[in-house]
Image (cartoon, rainbow, N blue to C red; front, side, top):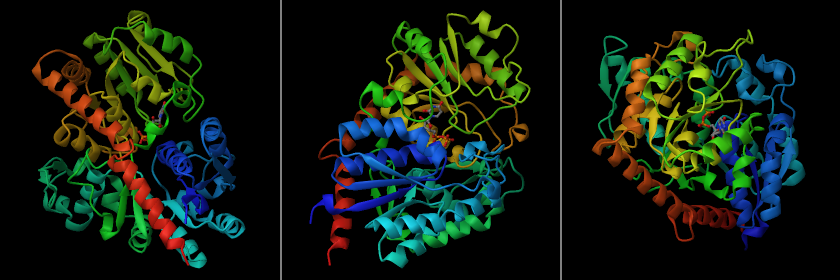
Length: 472
Ligand code: UDP
């Protein structure tokens, strides 16, 4: 039986960090002849339309099926159907209830289209029951990497944070191949509170057919293990399916207004001279923190491209007075969405200040760009350890508090910003070694997705497994 007879439903969580990799993954399946259906809400469908249109021209395409998102159940403004519309990037019970309410319309679509498999974001535990009802496998898409899932597992099962006397005392994550220290202040809020939705996700995952992940074996070999004892396929970095500049330019939201100007500015910069700063799709900073960041950047003296979410309620400029004038020519502030794959792949970019979202890390790795790790909330502090301690392709800026609420985080001083930027962008053996490792990892990433590479084979194995499952 051929892959062309396979029909697969993909159901992403409605936030760019989960949606974009699953769109890329659906495209990869489609390129192998699978009929891929991406199920999402109207606002998210609009966000990925251009990306899929291009995929459609190049290959078999991915069909989008839409279901309405009940914003009011989530306590979000009417018509908003992305996680980013929440004031704090914190999964509330209301938001989770709204995700649960997607079950009925989703089930209806499964009835109509009779797919052979559901590839579902872990945030939809009920897709396990839907898959069982229709006698098809449910495969869980985990949007994090292997190191992160292993570290979270160590925290959940061994609770090493319970043995320390205060939030600043370090403890070691037990059972990991590397010695990783953390403090209680750095661990994700959801580990401390263990909300019901997280338990539901865990229970449904262990009963699933398997797990598929956007990572590659060579990046974190000791951590690409069976997740929860289940069959696990590693098929990343899926972002590498965006090959042309045009593919990269349309990935995600519509780019900020001054994007053309920004790209021309980048073209005029020396190779590897520019520091790129972008904090994903959900992060917010207090105004004092933005000031420290700006003044640290100014003092560091390197050219920079800073992506700023200028959604301050007052509409006032959030940067220190005169900052943009003083750094004019040397710095570029891009307000709004940045075509990150295009920017990270630009030869002028030599460093990346990141919040340590999993996709951003993988995209930096794929582009061979070393990082300044500035984690803020959720599992980002764990990802920081991977970048700094395990892969050794970045330095920590020195953030100490994990919180979705920006006013709860301890301020990172301008001096810390300046120091971390100098370590990544400056000369010297340590910086050189970091750049060399980043280039090596980028080469490994590209190899992994080529014919015969580990992720290319991983995807082939998964498709074959599903073809075999389908056989009567
Ligand atoms: N992204 C982008 N432009 C932006 C902000 C984010 O292209 O201005 C993309 C980024 O390339 C990544 C995703 O959005 O693929 C964000 O995912 P990540 O896991 O890094 O962080 P999250 O937004 O989930 O915190």
